[in-house]
Image (tube, rainbow, N blue to C red; front, side, top):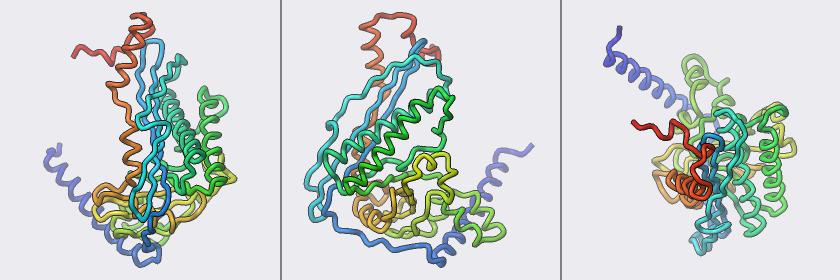
Length: 337
């Protein structure tokens, strides 16, 4: 049996070799006319950022769900922040939902995420109508994750359908109001860009490329304020589990590196205006070590729901209803050790 020390040494050797190959691939990408220099734009506009938070607590007969979503609106004059507004308010209280459907643990996780995303895009639509921003940024993609797709016989289908309709309303509203809509994926696990260029590589380089996340490769390709060319989210939208729900819209993506010391960020856009989106984002990043627009950082902080906050709502409900069996905590939440 191999010793732990020997096993760790083998792992270290493999990691070093893989990174050397990724670096070679990244350097070759720079010679393939796939990278564009970003021209940072003057900030003379209004930018909105949307984020949401969710916490849940499972009880014997019910599930307690706390949802929160917020829009933060930054007004820029001569590239300086001149005013900030919030929607629905600076410190919104969470929406409290109690439901008793007998979902499995997996179904419950999906349901919670569907509810969170639906509420976020509803808030985004309301922010566009009320504040008329030039740009609206979502924390995450502009479309829901494919793992949320539900068939018509699923107990989650009604919730899924309502989420899809909420996204469509957001897309139409952004077009009607001339608002640029983009989603910033902080830690993308996508491999779409690698798939598009795989035919240009052979042998171990192609093998490593096909096994790598895009950001693992592009970290060696992109320099500060550079982006990849924009590309279609998928080459077959009519067959994609989510995009086939949005046949009338076109989703494009690109990667860019807004700071020297952070990994590339993926951006998904409604339609195609990569040059303008990238030019604005480069101006909106406040930190060299954390490549997230300032408006999304603040939205994230204000949308968080703590477990302590959830517990407070739970104890408030128990105090009003009484310690009935239906509201007792699950065993896993009250272990004596």
